[in-house]
Amino acid sequence: MVAIAPAACDSGPKTPVGNYTLATVDGKSTPFSVASGVDYQLEIISGALELSAANTFRWVTGVRETVQSYASVYMDTVDGTWTQDGGALRLIAAVDSSTVAATWRRASVTLVLVDGTETMTLVYAK
Image (cartoon, rainbow, N blue to C red; front, top):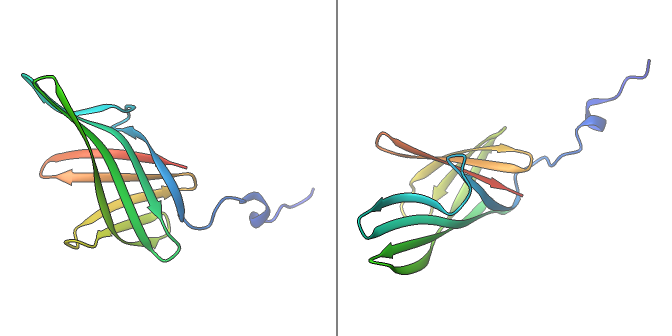
């Protein structure tokens, strides 16, 4: 019987550093409707997350807001720093030091946004 060293079996990345693209929001693909009403709709249409080796990040979310059939598209950008503790990540916004908890699993980063009692889960994939 031949024993295989753990390092030989685990050839994945050792850090979450890299570029990720939004794959799902609450388990659904984009565009994802965040809010809607009579003559109004707010959707997440795209997203990207960049984690640098210098422990900085850039998180960009594409949003489409439609009011009375007129659509406006804009990009929401958050820059800051990130920390890692195993598979747990923490994103800290430069503008106000707010934080977002995340989980890293080799080829994906999952962010859980909490606003009061509402949560939204965003999965970004390499």
